[in-house]
Image 1 (tube, rainbow, N blue to C red):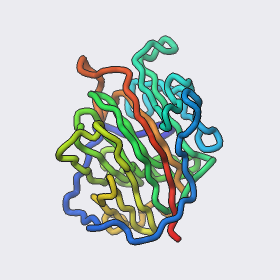
Image 2 (image 1 turned 90 degrees about the vertical axis):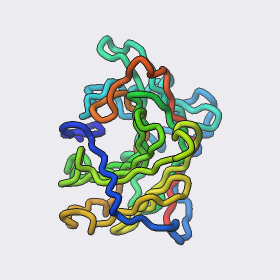
Image 3 (image 1 turned 135 degrees about the vertical axis):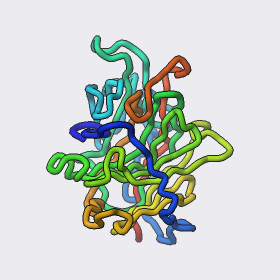
Length: 272
């Protein structure tokens, strides 16, 4: 990735379920202490806390032929009723773009190494809508993607309304070769309510959770080359809603706009 989600990604993102990879049967027994958070309790209509977040701005497809232009406008990213709102809008923007949305990150401001990273989110829905809560290595500018590493804590695409995906990308297992699993919500669509999405990240292990249910654990031994495990340095946090792209597909006549992702909070814990 040069500045986007899936830079250098060729072809359709093929998600590997990897049913043979074990996951922990219970949550970590560690005691956690809060080290950083944003509760998004700002005044209705106010912008993000710029001491905690910066914007990614622009179009150009973000490495995945996406359709949105990310802006810093209050129409796309704002606080309301105790939540962050990231809104994808169908509109003509800068003449060349038919959709706008928002993407914010903690790059340069807060870059944790290990801990529990969680967010309570109500995702949007619809064909071609792609919400995500994820992380990139803070050496991105020096080594580029995928060498910096990518941890997808939560992704969902509209054609799979009951599934949450968690993935890692690194050298030799990026783009369509990303490694991960998904969690199926059997009695509901993911977008129907808020859910807590989290990872617990330790040296040589990352565990994924939805509503405190651990559905996946990954470690260096699951890689073809264990030395290519690149999750041993600080990462920054990203929240965004993409529109279209090679992997999720594109909006169609069933897709309703605007769509919005509501984020109740983002919290980061370290162990005591």
